[in-house]
Image (cartoon, rainbow, N blue to C red; front, side, top):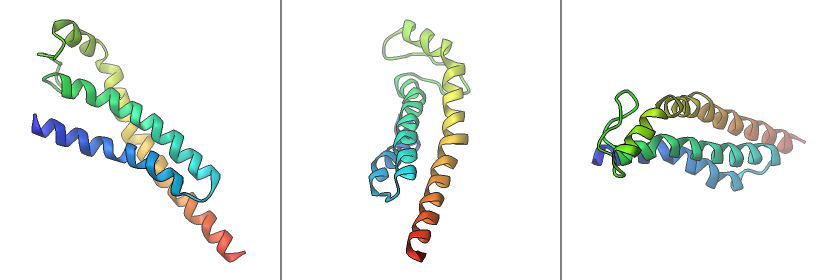
Length: 115
């Protein structure tokens, strides 16, 4: 259980930090990307971590022994492709989008200083 809590914490933190740190960006376009992209990332992470914390099992094994009983386990097992898709979208799109957004913010700030 402790491993699941630690994994979910380290999986969730980039999404939460993106939303919280969006207000520190100076340019409106990167700020909007970081805020709204961060909110999408929070939803994706929630889709992945809630079944992980509520049940035994993980992305590669079926869920069983859920807090809500067999119906919840069946629901999460039915949603398994969507849960895997949410994890892939988060890792392959959201994190690189945050890095690109920060690069755009850096370049725009350099242009403002040069002008």
